[in-house]
Length: 107
Image (cartoon, rainbow, N blue to C red; front, top):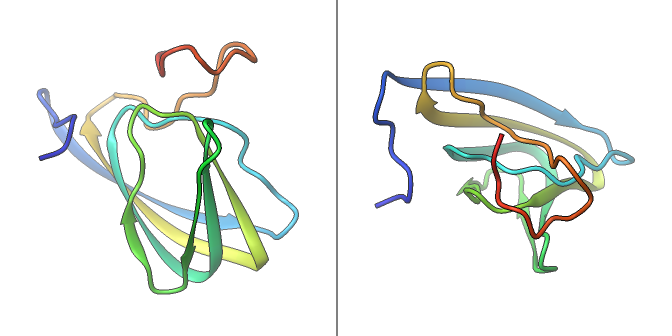
């Protein structure tokens, strides 16, 4: 069971993501459950605390919820589909308000 499940009006949002090999998403967090399907390339996810994991073409994984992380294409461009499961009108991604990433993932 996931930490967060929709309690209002559930909504699934699908986003097509393209990251070129010189772009890093920067730190951000997701207050909703999301799943990523890597269609092309290799995507590295790094948690703020330092741990990293690489996902390759064909991989499908659950993204972290309520934790600051960044994404980066390695060894070439990345194409992915992201499926967010949340409530209608709820933010899917939150950017940090300050450089202090010890803060909670909140709007």
